[in-house]
Image (cartoon, rainbow, N blue to C red; front, side, top):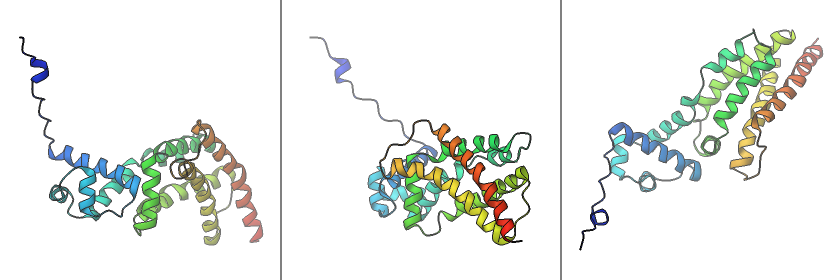
Amino acid sequence: MKKKTAETAAPAPARRLNPEEREEQIVQKAIRYFAAHGFSASTRELAKEIGVTQPLLYRYFPSKEALVDRVFDEVYLSRWNPDWEDWLKDRSLPLKQRMFLYYKDYARIILKNEWIRIFIFAGLTREGINNRYLTRMREKIFDLVLQELRHEFGIATPTPEQNELEVELVWSLHASIFYIGVRKWVYGLPVPKDIDALIELKVASFLDGAPVTMRAMRKQST
């Protein structure tokens, strides 16, 4: 009788991960866990769900806070595109075209299950953690959009009070894009398949309305 070598051969041992690969594996599994369940788990529960021992988890992340910070950096800060500011500043292109370019890419980055759900969980249970991202948005994107909007439409420099109200206009545009993800990954509702077309619609609507509102504010103050 022939030996069934193919059937009886022992499976090859799994390749041992180097420290960098192991750390990345832990981070990616933590991202999936936090997106599904939030941040309430203990380190013991996290280690079990991630598939490592608690001592091994502590070898890479000395505390739960350290792991949460790493997840936040991975999901949010590392995905920040440094080209966004350059695109918005490029006055060789019409503002509408620049904003289409930025907001389509921004939507491509944020409209993902883990981005939306972790951001919501963090806002509810991790006081202040989202502020790092939102502060960057305000300083590098919101103020820049308003600067270019005033330049494009010849709108006078605002008072501090007017500027704060104008920031709210940009907030409303960003919130409408974020809410696409909330509808899909929080409420489980369908969203349009052509996200680029939807983004163009939202940006065009913003550009039709925001300059009118900004001019009206200046007239009211005179």
